Image (cartoon, rainbow, N blue to C red):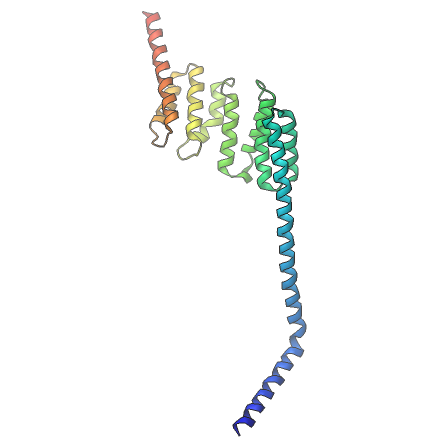
Amino acid sequence: MADIFNEVDEEVRRERLKVLWDRYSLFIIAAAVLIVAGIGGWRAYEYWTAQKAAVAGAAFEEAVTLSEQGKHAEAEKAFAKVVTEAPPGYAALARFRQASELAQANPGKPADAVKAYDALAADASLGQTWQDLATLRAGLLLVDTAPFADLKTRLEPIAGAGRPYRHTARELLALSAWHAKNVAEAKRYIDMLTGDGETPPGARQRMDVLTALIAGEGKANDGKKG
């Protein structure tokens, strides 16, 4: 008797499964097709992305080679092409290299390079660290020519506590203030550096030299007055 009941139960289950399949088979098949198509599409996208990155990487390396050969004008154009055609990561790197090539192709005339770095500094999509780096690079180009007030406007924001490039920014500001014969401001930035426990040893040594120069100039001026 038990076997008969088991056979009846099996038949009932088969009938129920058949009813469910007849009712929902199209949905099940459609879902399976969508899953397979989705996986295939994702694989295709990954392949396309990898291929595009490989092409961008090769173009970037070619531009770097031109730079290393001293062909800065050609390298600038090559990096400009990478900017327009490469994925975001390579494009951002190429923008920085493009600005650098502009500076090297026109030594003594940093206006174009500074403009390029200013555009990077204003681009919030890059993130604060990259923006600060662009600001610093522009400051490096201008430290010997720009008035101290202009350089201060540029670099003061990235010279604050916790900013990643604050030490170099403070060095540039101290040097610019000294060039402008603004001893009080030069000493202020020197004190900021010496009072920062994370200031690199090299920066401390350079500030020691600058402090000695300022002290020597002060003695010389006192001697003239006497």
